[in-house]
Amino acid sequence: MKLLWRTWRTAATLMCFAIFALGGATLGLFGIPLVWLVWRKEESRHRVGRIIIQRGFHLFVLLMRITGVLHVRYEGLEALRRSGNLVLANHPTLIDFVLLASVIPQADCFVKSALLNDWFKRWPVLLAGYIRNDEGESTMARCRKSLDSGNNVIIFPEGTRTPPGMPVKFRKGAAQVAVRTRQNVTPVVIESTRSNLHKGGAWYLAPEHRMRIVLRVKDDIPISPFLKARPDQPALAARDLNDHLQYYFNKDLCSAGA
Image (cartoon, rainbow, N blue to C red; front, side, top):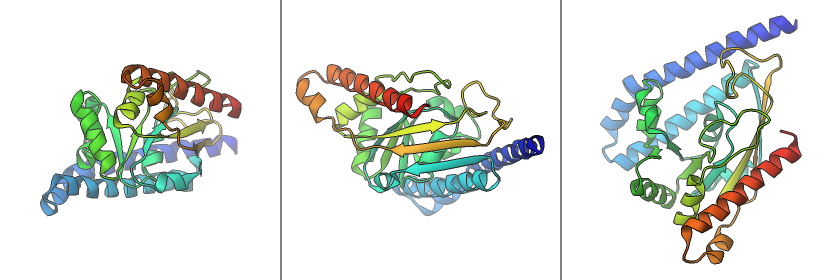
């Protein structure tokens, strides 16, 4: 029975990701042309695009849950329903952004420009107008504009997935964004069982047991103490904030046994 259950979940995993890829292709062939035809203003197109992507991600997560591929639980979800959040989360699995964007209204995100070279992944990036993380001052200005517009900006400070059992190590970019935009941080701690979606795993091969993910939304972390401690030194304030965030996440993950 265990072998049959795992075989089913492997087949279901392949089906889910095939549908995900098909959805990306559909956006490119039909979604973007239609949205750009109906909504003339770029900001309106991106707002509609984020709604479409949220609904699509929600259906994808629902499909993974119904087929037994994934068990997911959210704690403190109400905080993510607000507008103008700067959401910082650790990054253990391949679908962390999908899980967050499926429940966060008007979710914006920092993405690598390399995603535009992936035929299936580029269309959501273009449709939603996600912020590219390598455009210098333009990146920071777009982030501030997005937050002021009521969007919720999601950043994974690690920059890439951290292997299971390893402490998280944050790059300074996310802390710099918080300091320079003077935006409090909404931390989301993501815990997951070992699975095919961790770094180095074979995404298409289901693990022995169904994957379980818990996303815990914690109380906001104010940045005013870091700004007051370094009033004329934003770079050092960002460094202090980054050290604090890294310690905060590692302590929480360690206490949870992740």
